[in-house]
Image (cartoon, rainbow, N blue to C red):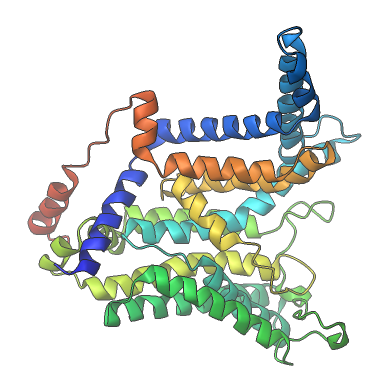
Length: 410
């Protein structure tokens, strides 16, 4: 076995262990992440630090300051992402949850794409580049074609999916034909896509009329191509959420009920066994990367068609990288990614409210990082809480039984 294949097998085994953690370990990781965030909030609080000078004389001051900053910080997160009890009207009170849904939608769609490659034993680190390519295609259709209202929107959406899928397929092709590792390929494609996007926006192909400003910016999408608002003009929530939910259903059916999904999972569990069973592993890699990027393309359309202003080079909003966290937290399953995307959407929606009360919004970045750390370190969680190791030894036997008894690979 070559060093490349041996490395791929080791990485696939690690990913299988991460994804087999189950609900309990995920909840524990989230709770620990919030605890880590609370520690940083307490440690950076001025009142708490000052009370340490006389903590033995009046320990209640230190504990009171710690409880106050944590309560205020996470209370602001709740009011900024779920429900604002201090709002004057019901319309304002429920606006936070609509923002959570709006910001969570692209994370859900992109997370599905990244999670698909994890299930196939691949590591798609190129969500940002694929999202940018999807934005290029969606923006071009939305700004340069004239079509009826509903048709224009769907054509732009499909264009975004196709644009992202093409870049993903290219990565899969290069891996299959040359053996290049997909991590290196996707990381480099991120840079290529970003600078290519910026180049296009400095050219009349996508450039806005105000060229003198010097800031590259694409034309705004035509009104006929934009995603309609779901709850009227009072809220920013649009059809991007609907398409993200449809993507969850499609992902679940594809991976859990279709023959294609079975082959993808078979290759992810053991490429050698899949090849021995007659599955073309190389073509499966190409298909997996294309499908993965296609889901990311839904997020790309969300970024291009969900706002009434032209996109800029920063419109990707790091969704491609955040999607890796969402996929890991969600266990690369449709329902799990849906919930994880909403959680991280809540973080994005609630961050400004925390900043208003003086809590650094970077604390939420620490919480996210801590959650991923605990999710990606299964032995650490098992050692702390003495959880049993997940049982996965019968999976290969079940796959072989389905292939050779039921003809699953035909």
